[in-house]
Image: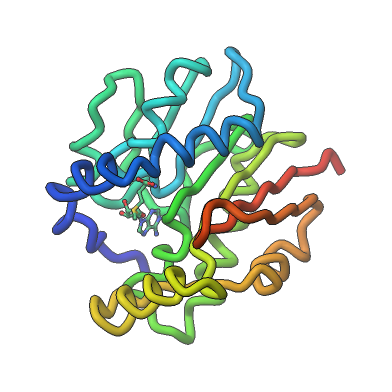
Length: 206
Ligand SMILES: C[S@@+](CC[C@H](N)C(=O)[O-])C[C@H]1O[C@@H](n2cnc3c(N)ncnc32)[C@H](O)[C@@H]1O
């Protein structure tokens, strides 16, 4: 079952905090260098929230879509060149093979929020299936996640699950690789800063 987003409560605070951190620009640069966007490309930001990363992409490509279940986060998107779609990663309402690039920044671990722990595996598998379905063959999926093998990553896990009680799911690199094992994809994982990793996933042609 899909639930309403807990990010509605924090939307007012999100942009000032994140802009101060400088992270959205850093993440954009990384995703751009990994995915080599072309002017004719269509890009989907899954769990894109207030569009802080997406707003950089509007200068690079033809179409930028932000998908997010929090209406309040979507309302904070500034650029009118970004298409806002209210929805969940579990059920992405686009046709198969629509996007050249799909990315997901600091969001995938939230896809389990308000699900029972016993359902996490199933719901994450469904989100991955959906992100790969809407990605064109030969396209790139980029995922940026917190690394809980690093102290700051562990603190974020503690904060989200023990203090906020959001029910966020985190993966070691090996666990992350496992999530994609059954698909015809090429997966590369590398460090990004001191507490995040970036995953480049290429959807193979066969
Ligand atoms: C920490 S914010 C990150 C927002 C944005 N990616 C960024 O980097 O600024 C996490 C986002 O994931 C969204 N989210 C939570 N559950 C989701 C789901 N099931 N499908 C898609 N997005 C979801 C939240 O609403 C929120 O906007």
